[in-house]
Length: 251
Image (cartoon, rainbow, N blue to C red; front, side, top):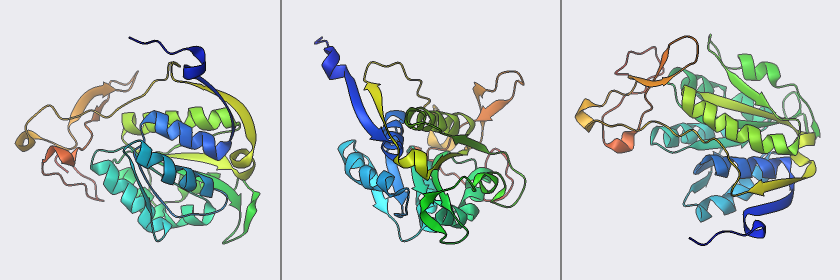
């Protein structure tokens, strides 16, 4: 086997936060992005429109943020790691679909590069005012995983962690970044040889007619003994229901 030299495996890059998010998403295995350009998150869409086709992935520019998260949910239910990116006004529009993803137990990642509000507000100025919306934006009582990055390197690491948590716990995960971090540039080192934990979804091991979309599986939570249910893979050609209502193991 031909060994990589250091220059091949180690890459020093001057990246802004949004670019680091893209690198982290691709490293985590993201292969689908649907979104609508919005300041100050547009660089994420712009970069992924070029990078995803190179990784045998799919990029779709949607007509609005409501449709964007809807497409991401559909891609995830088809077995693909998927994400979208937006800012405050778009995040507000995503709340209904975010609630559906929570109750239907759909893994996906939503990046919110925060800007000043309310409404159209201050597109080019920073804000951290969406923290409460991340927790309480969609109606009803549900757990939330939201991660915040404070450096460019954290943008990379936290994006990978967001995908891992999403796949492990079968839930949407929100990544919060403000405009300053999103557009700040730092030198970070990316290495192909770097040990990075990547959590992939559990795939069915039974024939389609035996498939139960919300059946418990051995991937548990340390300390409480609870078993998390298997992830839906409709490409397995099994019939599956994913309602926006409380459901049993069959959906």
